[in-house]
Amino acid sequence: MNNGNMINRTNEYDKELLENVSKKVRKKALNSKMIAVASIFLPLLLLAVLFLPLIPVSPKKLDIKVRVNTEENGYHLTRYSKNSDYYGNYKDTGDFGYWTRTSENTVLICSDNETEPFDETVFSKLVMYETYPAVIAVSDDLDFDVANVITISSDCPIEHYSTNLVNDDNGNPYYVIKNVKTSIVSKLKSFNKRKYSVVLLELSPIDHVAVKDLFHKEKTVWYASHDK
Image 1: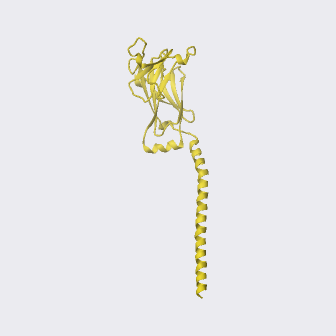
Image 2: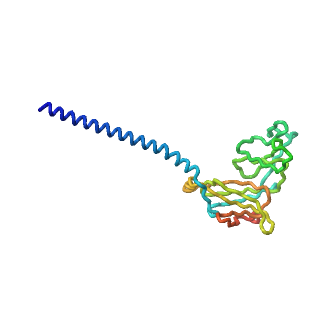
Image 3: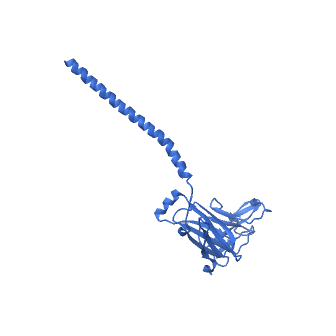
């Protein structure tokens, strides 16, 4: 009788042990499956986020500001020469010279002079009253009378935009901003109540600035007469 009870208890213990082992095996197998699914799903999700199509930003959500700078009021072109005491501000590599401190933050602007090799172009610093993170340098052979600084601000980061300089029906040149877009992920940043800006530079005189919406309808947001 005692032997029977011992055998029964042993069988029950073995049965309980097997059940516990089976649970651990099933749990481990489930975790392995979840890891396998995650290893496939997460990269796909990441790719989907990275390649999500850009969405248009309504012109109503854009704040456009224009600052007109002239040589008499607003900008100064710092030109150096080899005879100048400031020649140390030039980086000189033989025939090639340009304004100092050039880096990935330097924007080089030159004329469409195909007869002169680009690596022999001399650039000078364009100084404006406002301070921008980028250094603007223009080629010495580029003559201009005005430097228009156009700032596009939005409550979400601007991932894409395009611009064009065209003439209206009266022959007046004006600046068109179009295809302003953001991503779905960037759109979420609009909830932080912060403004994001893109700064553009146009060295040609412009009569007005217009924004074109998704349906190619233009809306004028600034006239040159406003700064007169």
